[in-house]
Length: 357
Image (cartoon, rainbow, N blue to C red):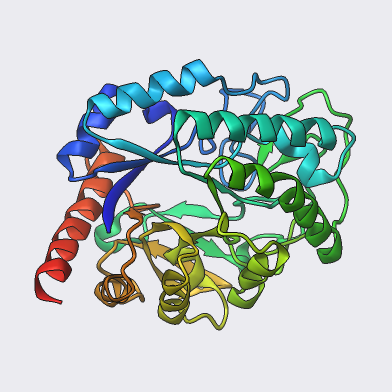
């Protein structure tokens, strides 16, 4: 197993590459869009209920020279760029919405995958959802009054419609006419995913890329009048039947799987690590399940995190594990402190597993 760190676009700098190395990471999972913050726009309310930000639908496609330069900088710090997590919503909104630009966008994604393969990045994660991550609140409910993410379905209108010009909780078109995208059925979402996989997966295979899907978080059946595909483990497993390929797999978020109603995370982890279907793992802990849960420090939640590592060790899992969504600690560098705590726990646990199992 390899210890990694996930970095958003605004964190891609030498200081954070050094931080990753100091904390024991050998690999990085990179997001090339700041989903949490988006573009600064005072007309939008910045919270988890009203949109994370803006991504311009005319946003340029990623370029080979830019990715190659970033990879070179990452490697100069003794790290390996293992994965890209998520496409820019501006690059594939009509694939999700079945809109008029979907064929153009699918061809652009094919070229993007070819470029990623040329750069030498072996894994690309994606989240096939219209509503995206929505409905959370940030509260001081963590251990020691730490600021943590909480989902309580009783406090929100889960069917609040999505405005036109928005996917994945980001506004890609500020000039879109007023109104809402309207309900989207489960059958329609599966058809859209099938189209995406049929078009994209052969390109991934040709370029030695594993495409891995993230489960729905929050894992509820319907959100904002749109069906969720991967809200239960049995639904998530259907993904593999849609396209039989070694390039088709899971981005396994332990916290999200644990949050699902009726889930058994350790059994799921055991099964799919044996089948080599996991691209990388978000190693995080939670307390509770839908409809009410909160994210927890890695050592305090409902998941037996050491047992999870023992399962991965038994099955010879050779991928990376990265911390994710850790509560913020009470200091000036809240994110870094939370990540450092998680990384230290993970590093020690990995050493223990390697030495004594």
